[in-house]
Image (cartoon, rainbow, N blue to C red):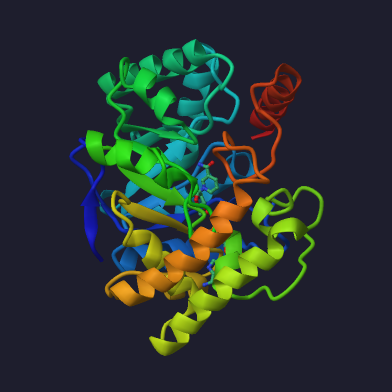
Length: 346
Ligand SMILES: NC(=O)c1ccc[n+]([C@@H]2O[C@H](COP(=O)([O-])OP(=O)(O)OC[C@H]3O[C@@H](n4cnc5c(N)ncnc54)[C@H](OP(=O)(O)O)[C@@H]3O)[C@@H](O)[C@H]2O)c1
């Protein structure tokens, strides 16, 4: 498995990384089983994946616990990435979130600690969090600092108070907003790019052929890629990906992951999976190359779709979902209350 540098951290990470969002067991349907998640993580590690991405908010910490259980005995083989609780920004909250993540992961140090979502209305709050993260690095509790869903302006400000090693934006054949500014910025400044939802949360595996309806609370319900207004466009891209996959004796998911990995500036694709079979398939995004002609075919259709969509989707939407702002005060206090409640019972 190819490895690439994680910014200036001195760590190297696998190009195909394992995203552990669904392993939280909430928001991803009724077929998430802890044993499958643990087997999937161990298979990935055996096959050379060293970057595992989780977050305090995934299943209210359940994903972190599963990752912690799965890596017991192979800690030195992995780069563990987690994120502070969504919507947390006060000093005590950030420290509590870090300590809880360390405990759930059952480790002394998190390799890559990331800000999950920026406070868009109050940049100073983001700066305070980043300063605190630098203190954590000084204390040896974390090794590298990352941000997610940040714009280049937010990065510019953030880099004045912390060495930011990586960014984590949504990026796939169906969501190419980062190409305008973020990717060139990261290339210029030597910042690693960890592309999330490279399969468009399943859309780019080719398993959907028409309207899909996810239950209330499912992570994919607010995903714009599944919205009826965008569905035909999403499927038009999937058609071309599947055609190329058939011609290359690959799967649609493998071509979708491969495309992300061949984009200049991308370090890793954080590919989600619930079971060993999915992870096994997705590992096939590594170790081969799409030709220039294939890249052109993929770019042509996905650019058409992307340009059409930019007229209907707000330009400043960094995340690909239509979700409430976690720093909006009522939302923030609800998140905080739920977090404290879940902490009290565990
Ligand atoms: N920083 C952020 O704000 C943020 C946001 C989202 C994600 N992320 C990170 O990025 C990672 C990946 O993103 P994601 O999980 O949202 O989406 P994704 O990687 O695009 O899609 C993952 C989902 O697709 C389905 N799938 C995966 N492999 C498959 C295969 N070979 N065949 C058929 N279906 C397959 C599975 O769900 P089903 O089986 O249910 O279809 C899986 O959970 C996350 O786990 C997380 O680490 C970060």
